[in-house]
Image (cartoon, rainbow, N blue to C red):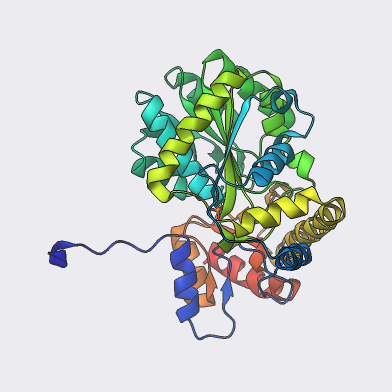
Length: 400
Ligand code: PMP
């Protein structure tokens, strides 16, 4: 009976890691997946995470099921971290927060909610976006289309195009926005542009749906990276926000995140939460506890919280350093006169190099540099020591 099952294509991002592992060349470099590495290119477990885990072990907590909505202390901490603890919407009980299976699972739960309660609504995704956004909406059967975002001519934001497309979408669409450090481009709207985006969304009765996968990891500051979301919320808009602790706490495999729905009334928030729980129950019943406890302990303990912020600054700082070093090295070695300053204007973990598919393939096939075919490289997988090698690979791929 399974003879008729066809082969699925490898995932465009996770498939890169599989190919990297199979390569035996010692010069190989994995700039595919967005996971933080140390300067020695080793995975990193944050010291605060280890400390929180030690505390948890000492407490000897049990492994009973969590409620469907997750760990209460986590849900409180995560909403406060996102919106600010004294945000009126929290005080007024207008936020429905449900622990999710990291960013992906939280997005997926929200998509299921949209499909069930807004079956006529469309989602709008930036072009380009993190590849999984399309998969998530497809599998949840939410129709979607793209809005212009990246302008290859300027290697910057196509702001006019974005505004025009958001305006042209049917009223009441769900507009997916990257809270900070847009993936894959690394290009974010300015605060003034965010205000204009919010104006149009408000005019059109759209519902903003933020994906916040890099809070604190983009700029090194938790509040700065949440400012887009907070400015939308302060307008009194209803907003959906998916959160992830994969990057900022390095909890990739713990699958810890949340979906927050900011509603117009506490009553609506209670009802929305009840429906999110109803959707979660048949999908996975209840979420895992370990990551939730780590986050709740780190955020809830002033000492650990401050240590976390320092460690996050360190991680963000390392990425900024290699970003600068790559720019310096490209500017020095490339004799073609090409302006590489776009690299410095991008933020977060990635750089969108402008390398096309064939050139990206040259990076991998000739230089053993593994990356996605859209020209995105993860600077988190780069060390200062490898900048020169990468520069040679990029120059060769661009100009040959
Ligand atoms: N959204 C974006 C934009 C991302 O880059 C990522 C991670 N690559 C995620 C969501 C979700 O990651 P996770 O499911 O590990 O939280």
